Length: 463
Image 1 (spheres, rainbow, N blue to C red):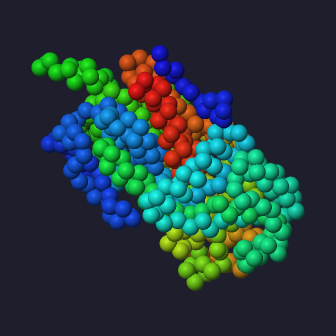
Image 2 (image 1 turned 180 degrees about the horizontal axis):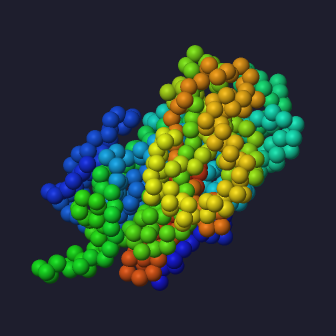
Image 3 (image 1 turned 120 degrees about the horizontal axis):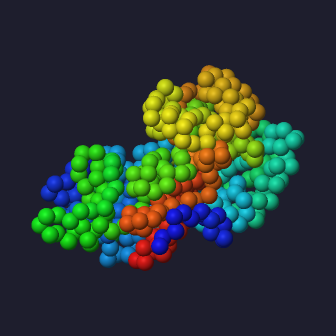
């Protein structure tokens, strides 16, 4: 019997393609040219797959790619509810290739981030995807931050992060002429990339290997197949039916879900445990005006406070030459609520009633109030940014984009930082693997995560 849930942590292992007449297989030319839907690939006339992956973000696409490269004889499909791929968490993140400095030594997150960063650089080199290894400074601006900075440096060394060094004020100025600070960690291995371009390249690899991507397929129902009156054996060979909101369906033997912001609801649809619940946190970014972008050369981060779950407002260069400032971290009132007034009554009620949010709020009340204040008043965010670059003023910034992070939360109000692999019992539960929580930095770690997911799928389903 498949174990119902597996928490993974470190070495110990916790844990519009409508289709009558054939599927539409998503494909994309290289180098970020527009995505298009095209016919082609293996088994174009069938509605049955050996394995279906639900979710077309970077983790789902990396996992689909890893599975089909490992098992080329299998028919594998990816289902994505949007008309395009990688448009939510993947398409709204900061684009940083993290080095792995922040995470507990020997933890799975630390190992996967260090491995994943190396794999992302290697993959981009192979595919000709542009990136910049622009480095990062983690800067202490107050004397009381220095012990935390030194401890973080030691953690990075234990994690095997390349090229780390502690630098003083004069070297900070050499790296970032407009940045002030008492001491900093120079993290030269940190980079930036367009993760959506990377994800689309994964999708292209997947389709070229014979896989299918079905867009505009919003999953509504996951159930066991019933044999047709004509005596078709599809219900036996492909016992799981996945139906979308239009009444279209596919059948398969096994299911892997990488549903991000909807991972708890997809698990519930399949009859599996909905916990941990997803609580959406919106991160709002500011933009440095183009004429002021000379103030920032690489990533500039504050020293993180271990009492709080987020890294704090920072300076992030982008591949297009712009500079993002942020993000903050505020509760989103809609799972894909990228604007401050986006609202879903169902999403709000789920957060209040079904998650441990109320306990989290009480545990981090002052932090939450401060984040809400900064979200409303630009001057508050600018005051924080001026600790690092005093020359920045309110007139130098504009409101920018936002992203929503799928934060898994248990009923006691604790943020779930480990990977959660969740199956179930019964006919469907034994044939499904839910990737319930792929915590930040999932994009950096995506190729390393995909190997772990492929291993888990092979072990559970005896492929």
